[in-house]
Length: 201
Image (cartoon, rainbow, N blue to C red; front, side, top):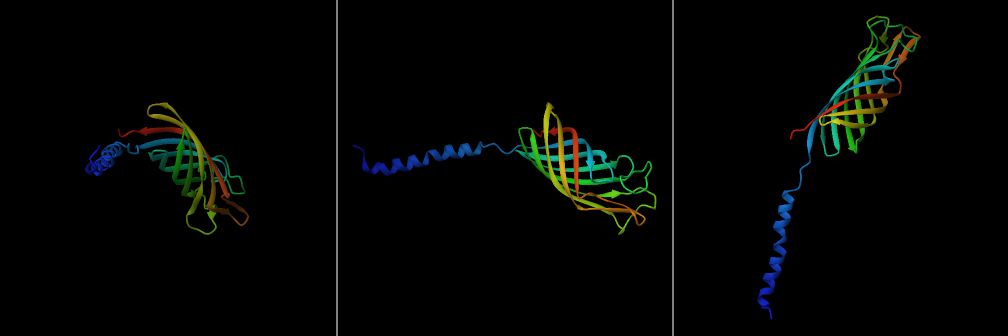
């Protein structure tokens, strides 16, 4: 017959023994893997300049688990002459320079992002083209990006994406009382490029 005085001791040991094992397992829990990425993309933009534009977009990003935060710089140049009554700019076309911030969710090679752009439209040199209210031709957009990425080597990925934006600040260019162009209320940007993951481990 068990000694009644030992019962509290047996219960206390039963509760205490799993604790070290739990603590030991908690110490082995993997930490979130964080690494940086660098990328360069060719982009085609619609709605940011008088005609469709092409450009480049280098970016740097921090990525952990299935999330990433990136900063990009975009330079876009309009193709062809203005699709309006504005006079042609000749070899010096209307262009746009933008800074971009995006927060993305990744899963199985597919990503979805919230994207914000801030920049300016640069008009060509001729004095006949001006902004009606003076100052800098600021651009501000907010939108979403969807795309996919494919690993083609250990430290090289191919990615493509499509963005849709609402243009919140819309520059207005004019050349006289009748000839004018205003940024579209919506814009689209398509891109394809290469991503270079940098693994700190």
